[in-house]
Length: 267
Image (tube, rainbow, N blue to C red; front, side, top):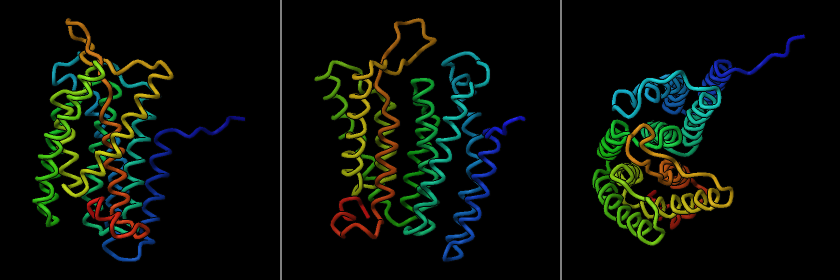
């Protein structure tokens, strides 16, 4: 007898239907509409990310066209998009729908950057610049434009100083222009008030990843794979930044935290 298998298409359909049902159980109509938008965005984000991961490096001249991704890479992509959608739905429990939709955009862009960093060892400006711009526009639309601009500026200056210090003391390539742009974009999304918590949380994630790679002897990400020059090895920064930004989003409006903790998180 043939054993049924859970394919990526089946998982996407089932997860989308589950998120739609969950959205219909929301307490308010705006929350239900926001949940439905997030549920329908999930399968679309999988296809958009797959196209970007396959053709954006070709358009940028980083590498020639390659075959379709293997099953493991496809599973990782679907899992990342599903995690971003699930976290966005979780925010609907105690966060206004307008803020949730904006944070959902940030989480999907961060997921795409994580996929690029893992597969290519490269953070494309074609994703970083829209992420920064969307963060500034979201701050202006939600009424805290000054905080978004301040977070972006502090992310550029303080993040650059920190990465430069790590590069000098640890004798490794910890920083680049794209890493600074990533920190600036995350600063725009978390705001000036939440940037300090974001920096602390992403720093913990960065050091945890570094320790894991050192103990398991896992090599760093190789950048410029197809370049004729000597390859550059760098530590991945997209995943710790994405985790730090996600934790700020999840915690800063949580009713379980005291007021001072929400204030430290920019809530």
